[in-house]
Length: 476
Image (cartoon, rainbow, N blue to C red; front, side, top):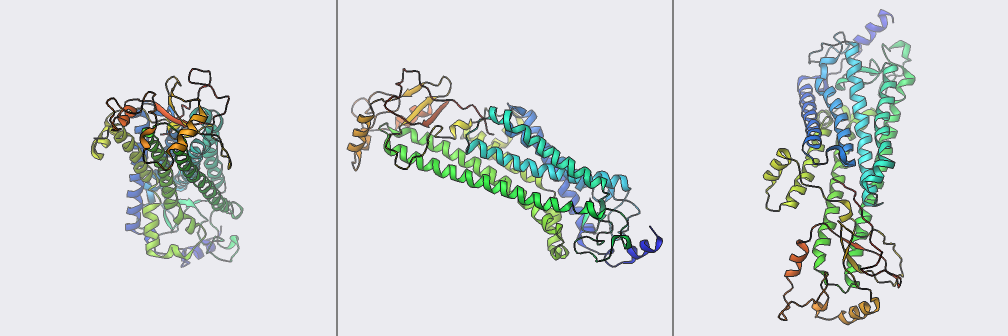
């Protein structure tokens, strides 16, 4: 490299851009946000390992642990800001303290890239996990054995391969557009987006043109991740919609007393809680990544002060948003098991002691063996199943009688002619029509799942060999 090229680069106006990114306020924002995200991700890891009965024994926890570990690397790299930048950088407009060299810049750039890419892929893995659990009804054992290894291989491999490639092509360099070393040509305007038409030999101090083309892979992978996430969300929404329709259909068809509906509705609401949880993770991912993607393609928006402040504020906060969502679900579980707990008391319980056993996903799936047929005339009664030994607590084999009773009840005001779900007469002793006690009967029976399954003339009775399958998969 000739001194004339170096002098030309130093004196170029594009090299000396003064932006919020490289001024004291922007550097402070990035450093504080990175520190907050690092602490938040470490908190998630602490809660999983030391404040959960299952610790790393659940797929959900292992995915969240991997995502949090990756975010610690990325957020720490951001929090260091200009300290790792080379002291002899061509960007003299930075107001932050620069104490590093090219080696520290490479380390910072690699940790940022590796952590960012791993976090993106773990977010995708989390959505696929929700999709398989809710839509495909796969339990944790099957997901752990057949699918989960690919989650970790894809996440770590994606970050490691691309992160190493950018290192080999000498693309971890300072830039005036963020206060940390990242994937960029040196100087940034040499053959890059929004740069110059000059050939590399006339301006390039460090970097590789062919290697820089790999940045396009980041944009393509973002689109791929977005497609997978949206596909998973749409199918989860459709599953919930189908569950609600089936619940209503089953209630209208059965001749049992439907005090159990309160419990079934709670389980369906829990499925919706899981959907909301997954939706929040998606929103958090998009919120922290949309601005870097816009900036990746050299948009003129990155020259706007509001855009710069927003990007510096949100980009490092993936771990912080994850912690809010993670705690929200833990608090929900704590308050669901103890309804008298306030939010503050539930939070104290989450941090102070190991949580109660989590709800199993089989309670979310009201139908396991249901196959939808448009003109199906078979009756679909609700079975009340003890999850401990699989015993059907109540069952009626006489389908024709069921249908007859159902017809008699249609349009009738005497809806209390149904049988209680645990057998016996539905009318309490003394002839009273007060049915309030039946809800208490259900609430006293823990470990109960409500499943609807096909019946035929060959269906076994309560004492027969046929038993509904159990699903011991866990979600949260």
